Length: 288
Image (cartoon, rainbow, N blue to C red; front, side):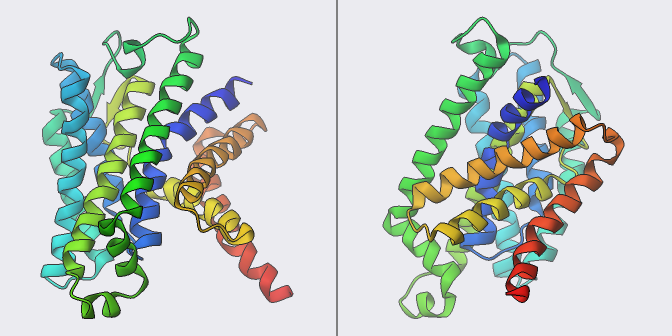
């Protein structure tokens, strides 16, 4: 049972990561690999600032700003230098490895016995239940903010840029600016996941972001399958399903571990699970 409770908490923590992937891949159709680096950047900034006794109201905006700068840099390389979006993300992700090492000063930062997000408020004496309520409140606020943003004129311009860039450009919208802004928001959300996970697990590690884009992608694909099946067009409902996809993804990994699969093969199990999510709907359509 502990596996599943931990999976639920991890799913909530990875919710912001899933939102970031949703914005970059589903709204802008940009495969943004910067995610691996900006996720670790969020954890690195969080760890260093916690060690230096910085309060949450300073750490949180710092993490958001760091992730946004990383995403904006990818957007600038892609739009202004006309470099393929995938390559631009890889370049920034690679550079962020060195940046993260410089920020942390070493490869691992233990945060044991330091005040964190989960010790600020006490909803329950049980630490896991307390973490559940804090993370739930956090993601509900994020969903409300993103949902509101996507329904504003700016948000509509961002969504239109992903749907038909040439048409939106003909209407006078600066699509390059929309892409840069969208990638900045996406990576700021990704950094927020690093912020949450670092505090939940009690350490920041230079390798914590390796392959994390697969986690976000799997969550979004699960959500997209349900969205298409139910023909959902409501923004907040779509975001809620993306969060649900993140939780389901972690629950499946917890089930894998509970069945006795060696933890060394967890990354392989993750990749196979995502492959099944992507491939089965297509195979089903062909069979029909």
